[in-house]
Amino acid sequence: MEVCHLKRHICALFILMILISMVSPSAIAKEKIEKPGEKQTSELAHEAKSAILIERDTGKVLYNKNSDEKLAPASMTKIMTMLLIMEAIDQGKLKMTDKVRTSDYAASMGGSQIFLEPGEEMTVKEMLKGIAIASGNDASVAMAEHIAGSEEQFVEQMNKRAKELGLTSTVFQNPTGLPEKDHYSTAHDMAIMAKELLKYEQITKFTGVYEDYLRQNTDKKFWLVNTNRLIKFYPGVDGVKTGFTGEAKYCLTASAKKGNMRVIAVVFGASTPKDRNAQVVKMLDYAFSQYTTHPLYKRGQDVAEVKVSKGKKKNIQLVTSEPISLLTKKGENVDQIKKEIKLSHDVKAPFSKGTELGTIVLKKDGKVLHESPVEAKEGMEKASVWTFFKRAMADFVKWK
Image 1: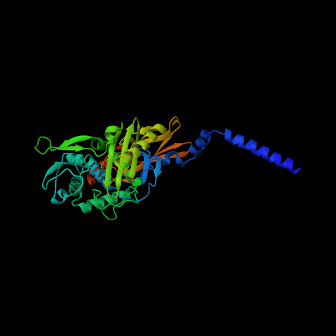
Image 2 (image 1 turned 30 degrees about the horizontal axis):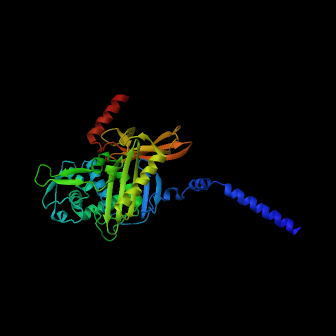
Image 3 (image 1 turned 30 degrees about the vertical axis):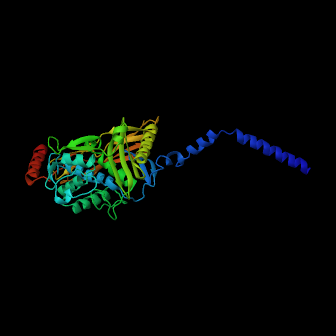
């Protein structure tokens, strides 16, 4: 009896081994790939200390690796420097043609530079070239002093803007990224800064240029070559900023656009420029092969009008504050998307251009997919007594 039982067990075990051997290795591999968060994307940036990949319009994270780890950002710091420059231009506080004088201190900056001399003047446009293309530390400090009065006050503005963007893991000590104690950021925070900077499409006319010249038509003509080599070698790359110090190693915040889709890839702490670029290329390839962006609104597009009390005008036009899109896996559609605009109540003058006065909400099947602020297209001053009087008289005549 026991012998029969033993034979049965041996036969069952033999059959089981045959069945296991018949299972396809590729089927097992496929099952692993389909599990979320497994090795499928973890290999995209295996040579980096931290990394992140996001779609620009929606901010959706497509991949991350230690993206909240605080690390030295090196010259990627200049993304915030450029953001404050572009915001000052947008607000009318600065023009591309404005002349910027170089102080002794700005001219003394080491590291990457455009070799500004004390007292030398360049336009904002030329300084931006020097920052975006050549990563000029001297140009960064010259612009910081021009905008805020001193480097210290500009750094205060940088940290204030970081807080406004919700970047809780970023602290700046200078506008250049030169090594300094307690100067740090994260891959996540860098991606958000780049997302904000890229609202100003004009910036890619600087960050996306591979080579240019400064001091043309002089005997000190200076050749600029972009430190981001992917601009030349990866179609669609047009920014944003490289970084390197001994502490930070090789870093890059890159942006690329194909069709309607723009993505931002950030890498911290790669061992070599080749490794850094390879990780970014893998992330960009992954994004463009797997996802599609469906644009719905452009930045600055008119979307609504809201009543204003006590203002020079009775109404103000509201516009989108950023490009608004939906992101899907390739092949998915965006049918039956409902758009809702929630307006602020009791809007009173005065207020400035860009004041948030409502929200666009995108929904599908009752689920909120995306929310984005809408803002005042222009500023409005409080109405004068004479304006109030004329309105009262007009209303009186109308109702008489």
